[in-house]
Image (cartoon, rainbow, N blue to C red; front, side):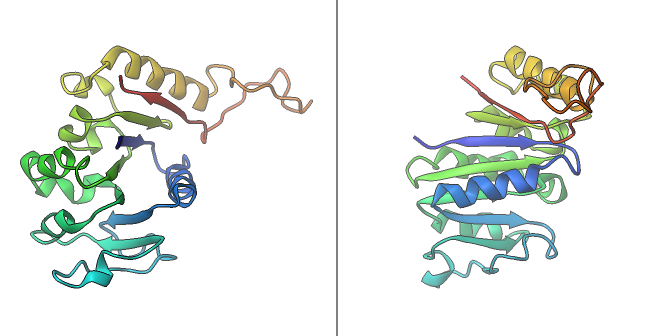
Length: 200
């Protein structure tokens, strides 16, 4: 069973740290697609060259800097691992949903899990929501209702989004008990709070 996970959160909420922990714990081959050559620097870069097996057959985590008219075509050769589209807003809007649609549809045959990462619901192309199996939600600031038509199980995802935002902003008690006397009874903001929901 492969997954299509949408991971959302504003700057500084802990998205990247959480995602790195998930990737390392998976034990799978991972490829992080990023628009920025200054991100994910601790991992080797791969250019995804046609016919170069070492660009696709490796262990651990690698990164690839997004190249329009190249990257999506080369991903058809990626098998048995995880693909991360990091910070989708900067590059996937230049492509069409149809181009991404094929990759998502064929993920089961290619044994690929996919993560689409963005700052909020409007920062991720709609096609990812259509096929999302899971959401990892940190604090977001945009309006989930703008994706109402493409999110299966919309009401549950919206409720979880509101809950996470309320906890992150200190408007609702954190679900974990605070034993520190300095925190007891005080309004506690937790910008790094996140939660997971399966989109069933």
